[in-house]
Length: 119
Length: 181
Image (cartoon, rainbow over all chains, first blue to last red; front, side, top):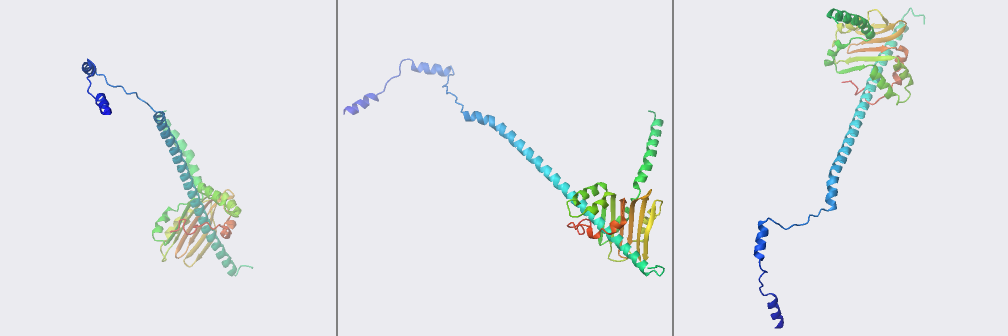
């Protein structure tokens, strides 16, 4: 029973101190609000600095990779051109050699059958 | 500068340049009139290798096997121009197609060293001489179903070129893919 008595006494209604209403109303009219401390974490500061840095690095790496690929492509094209040129020259020499050999053979044949030839 | 001075200066520059270009043409023949034959031909080879292309090719061939003789041969050559057409049927090209070329090699500087005419076949080799050195050659090979013109500009050794056959490296696709159609 004493516990119940103690609880009733502790939870009994109490009036606020005098002038409490007025003070609250005046503070609302003055526009005061509760101030919460702004806490900036270290992470947010780092992230702000690192984002442009990462973007710049990505751009630099991307650019150099692109340049490298372009150079590779140009070198490949140059090699293909050289190979083609070599093939053409070899083909031209083959034909020239073939035709000259054929002409020489014909001349030799004619000379062999020529009755005026002392051989 | 007055317009009259300008005109006379232009004339002077032209007078200085024209003989130069005429000489530069030298052993190089005009073969463009044969291009029309490609339409009728079953197989066409059209090679135009100028000095820069020959230089490139020589560099590439240097990586191959014993090509020293070829290098020596290519050393004096400044251009190789080949047009070769193979036809299904005879009379695909006309006499005048060949005559246009023969006319070009009938001028001063040219001398015919080989001429073999058999039935409907004609084989001729012409040399172009600059002073006392060879400055180029032309091979005309006109057969019933085939017409081939080889024009080499520069210092050419006919014997070396004729003996070149077995020495020519077999580059992959040299005969099949290059420009044969």
